[in-house]
Length: 613
Ligand code: ADP
Ligand code: MG
Image (cartoon, rainbow, N blue to C red):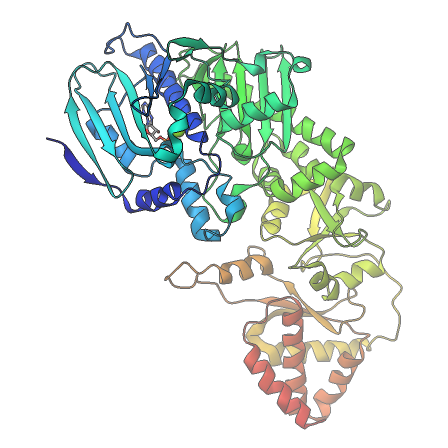
């Protein structure tokens, strides 16, 4: 008796989209099914390294495709790893495929109207329902004691699973074609599609008994023989991608390890759409044999946007992550590849700066992550960082190396400011002191920049210093205007400390301010104003706001500023008014720093002050 199962809700949603086809190129279902067959064969080959007992061990590792025009069916069969009844339910009835998951998330984010987005994802096995009236998946697991089963569905809400006799190990998918898709029951149609999409499958493909030639191991061929189209097709095949690669690096090395590798950078950073974290996707091969399609420990975390292959003759086929020796080998391999890729990016930046800038716009966030977390490649990564600065035009960036080349002899630090925009930084009180001293300041607009700068700490022996940090020491500077006398200034500072109480950790006079009367500075070594803002903004859905400890700032006064001088006078003449002024001064400084937490109190106070004008 067939057992009926409901599809998981997400799959229903996916099927609904697939069936009402958003894809104009329906033929890609062939690629999806052939790639699944190839994956299954690869898995079997791998299993055979450790399992001696495999069902139907004599079956060849091939993919057999048959067309039947009369019956209007297409059959794709492999003698790969196969699935038992449980696996059929799990793999074909629930959302396992990362691409499908990403696709659904993207749809939720951007809405179905975002057709471009849709074109960027594959939906794997379910793509068969674009052309199928019904799909039957006959499968038998490689485990010798399992029975064979058939999974059947018409792509609406449910499917059945039933035991069958006489199936060999592997999977045979029979597609009964819809009327508008009967073309796929023709040998010629399938042949054309296979040539286009499945040229890189590393197992023999037979179509109605004829062997279809496949091109294998592109990475072992010489660069000069490979066309751009071939690279692109390979990228699409290998990365299950739908776009064109943005950058490509094909290289070989003999020492310290024998390596042949092709790395690709995709067009867009999918994490940017607020989608799930990218998974490692650079496959590891040894002499054309796939060892691991997505090794987690080959490339550093930040390299998870990369696609491609790495083939090394120096790896043992039965490599095991459990042994120290093999782990060390993988690590070494990863280091060589990462260094090579970073060198490639450095060359791009030099030779094709515009392309590099576009790459950086999309993937710079990974470079930043690396600069902050990858100790091994920190220096090379830091050289790739780009920021706007007080010396660049809006929208243009500079590298840290270029910044250093412009530094004066006496300058020891690289200064930066973090703010939401160029405008906000330039209007704030922190820049003026550095500008007056002709010091360049890097502008950082991203939430992660604070973290990056704190972790990077220095570049080329120069300390990276936040221009709004309390302990910033700026050299002497010819200031204009008369400063408040020392004893009056001391009295004002003392009075301000008392008046502002716990709102300030410290009040002091400063020579960094030029146009502003006062500024607040970060007094908290462990929490910068940026981090504080981020923590406040991070409110888990439905949860409580994060507990942010009370803020303690340094208030710095500009002793030359008219308002400061005025306050010094008023505090002796009209204490109430002076208190209002002091509080307002403090709030204005907080506002300029983006730290004002309760604007309503300030508004009330301003009214009071206005009454007295
Ligand atoms: P993906 O291939 O990205 O995992 P698919 O939707 O194409 O996603 O396939 C879902 C799952 O179904 C696969 O991960 C695999 O476990 C299983 N599967 C599909 N086709 C086969 C096959 N020919 N042989 C064995 N397992 C298969
Ligand atoms: Mg697949």
